[in-house]
Each structure stands twice: as C-alpha cells, then as structure tokens.
Image (cartoon, rainbow, N blue to C red; front, side, top):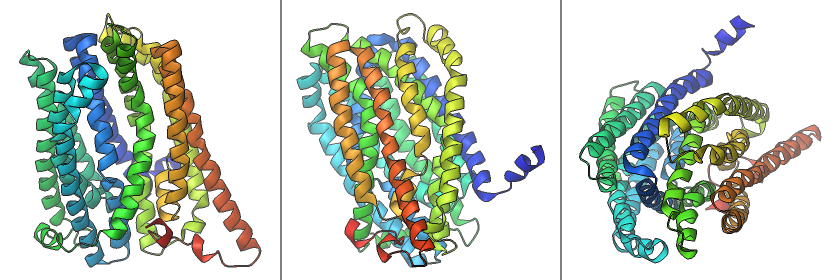
Length: 470
C-alpha cells in the first residue's frame, strides 16, 4: 500500500498538485500572518473599517475582471495542447486587451463611486478612500493573470509555485513595513497597492524566464503578444470569461457578505460597535481562507490538466467521468479531515494569537467551516462546465444560490446579528452541491447513450465555447 502511494507522486497530475499544495500552504501562512499582524496592531474597530474597504474592492474586482484568469488558463492550455501557437498568442493578447479595459473601469469606479458608497452605507467616507487606493492594484493583476495563464495553463507548476510564494511573502513584508509607520489602515492600504504593482513586475520576470524554458511550452515573445493586442478577437474570449466572472463572483460574494452586511446593519440600527463586529467576523473569514489553502491545490491543477488532454484530443470529456469522481471524493475527504483536525488549532490561534477582543471569531468560524466541507465537493466544477459547454446552466444555478444567500444572510443578520450571518453563510453552501447533481446527470446520460450503441449528441461534445454560450 505504501509503495503504491509513493508511486502516485510520479503521475503528472499528482506531482502538479503536490507542488501547488506547497505554494498553497505558504499562501495560507502569509494570509494568517498578515491577518494576525493587522488585527493586533489596528484593533477590532480599525480592522473592521479596513476589511470593509478591502471587501468592497474585492467584489468590484470580481464583477469586472471578466474571469480573466480562469478563462485564459482554459483556452491557453487547450491551444497549447492542440499545438496552435497562433491561437495561444491570441488568447494572451485578448487577455491583455480586456485586462486593460477592466483595470481602467475599476480605477474609475474606485475613485468616483467608492467614497460615496462608503459614506452612504457606512457613514465613513474614509473607508471608500481606502478602497479607491486598492483599486489601482488591479493594474498589476492584469500582468499576474498573463503569467498565470502561461505557467498554470501549461502545467509549469514549479515556476508558478515559486512566483506565487514570492508574491505572498512580499505582501507580508510590505504590511509589516506599513504597520511600523504607525499610520494605521491608510498605510496598510498603500502597502497592498504596492504589493499589487510589484507583483505585476514579478509576473513579467516570470514570463521572461518561461521564454527560456522548454521550447514546447515557452510562451510567445511578449512583443508579439503586444502587437496582436489591437486586433485580438474578443468575442469568444469575452463570452466565456464574462460568464465565468459572473459565476466566480456569485460564489465569492456570498462568503464576503458578512463583512459588508454587519457594519451596514449596525449603521441602520445605530450600533456603535458595528465596525468592530465586522472586524471580528473577518477573522473567521480569514481562517476559512487558510483552511481552503490547505487543500486547495487540487482545484488549481484540474483546469490545465483537462485542457491539455482535451486540446490534444487524448480523451474526450465524456470519458472523464471516473476521473472527475475520484477528484471530487479525494478533495471532499481531504477537506473534511483538514476541517476537523484544524478546529483545536484555530481555537488556539483565535484565543492566544489574536487575543482579547477577538474571541467571538471562533464560533463564527465553526459555522463557516461547515460550509467549507461542502466546498470540498466542488473541486472540478469550473473545469467541467467550461469544457462541457454548460456555462449558462452553471450561471443559472449560481444566480439562484446568490439570491438565496443574500436573502438568508440579510434576514439572519437582522434577527440574530453576526452569529446569524455566520450560520447562514455556512449553511447556504449546501446549495453548491446542486452542481454535482447536474454533473452526475450529464455523465449518466452519456453512459446510457453509449450503452444504446449511439454516438453522444453533438451538443454534448466539448468545444471550448459552444455557440449557445457565446
């Protein structure tokens, strides 16, 4: 048994996952370290103001960034797998074109809308000023998405992991330097902006190094990509990326509603501790991010692995049901084990790491952790719905999930306060399992068709973007 397990490490997918897992653990550690430093030095009230600003920026970014990272990885990996260098170049050029448009829109919204929205809903215009600063970091995110598509899309996991770890460690250093200035949340906002821009520079360095690697996996020269930007076709890329953006945004927004709702509801009911409550709740959210990072590498490896297989026509999607089943069960099992094992560890972190004023974060976390177990079953969702051409179905279910989540979290927050918000956020995650039911029905239908001796319907083949989803 031990020898069989050791032999698995030589399989490309398992090897990629292990490499990404190392980077994911480092990322989780930097999230926790940054959170501890900011929380202890700012205190619950200032932490609440800062996290509110950060989550406003995050939601704006999710809604406007067109799902660039996911769309680019899927299309670039399929193009490389098919040996189509022109298509690969066009994917990167389209990514840059849409990325620049996205960054410009985010900066404009941050400058003009964020201060107004913060004053209107939170009674604190300075929170909007923090958000406006953060919005400039979206420029660096465009370059990061470019490098992510190149490295992750061709399964160059070692360079990708090194780039990711360097960027995360850089964030910790900048936050420490900002906190030492004694300027509070404003200094932290500028540190996050500096991190976003410097990460963009690191991304260009990683791209250049990738050019000197394996010729079969080397990206096109950056100059050629830039020349292709004005004429890069956007229709197909925009279609898949925008739908993925909406899907990812709807999934992510539910987890971030707590930090936004708690201080907003506090203003409605004239509760002076509203920002402090939001700051404590944000600690629970950080702990769920750390938990996700401990087992999150599988999801990162699924998309390029399927993309290269499908692009190279090695295996049709209809034959990948057993592989997806194994991935889902493995991810769910690891997530459940990690959730149970880390409960006592996180109790120690909350009570002795964060210290006085943050004790309520642990019961909030327990509710959120319930939802993370359900997330463990969703490791292959993005990859399946992209390659099966079922993004509209994905969108419809996520829209229902978002609507129910907003209503449930708001109602629970009004009635039971922050604890109600935590409970509703965690329990709403069970709705995500609806995606698994859809995937099961898809493969069951394909299996029945095969048994009948018929070819699978053309509509169930796997073009990267069927006409109906454009």
